[in-house]
Amino acid sequence: MLSSLPPGEKFAQLRLTLRASGDKWFPLQRALSSLREQADHVLIELDVTATAATSGMDPSKIRNGVIEPIEDLGNSRCHGQIRAT
Image: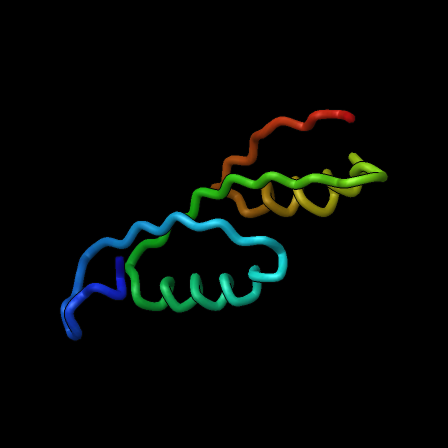
């Protein structure tokens, strides 16, 4: 755990595993930006589970607002399962 590192001790690699709901995304974004400033290379592997409680998700909105912007990142691989309810 990071808090157990002696003050001033440096390290070459960091691996984080975390879970964050929507209300934690902005602080998470700030933390990852800080990490990006300190590291030579940062790779993020993201596993997302999204659930619509009642009305379901609109496939065209998911395609236009989620899938296409991720694909536009260029070197990202976007794959997954969409289950109709």
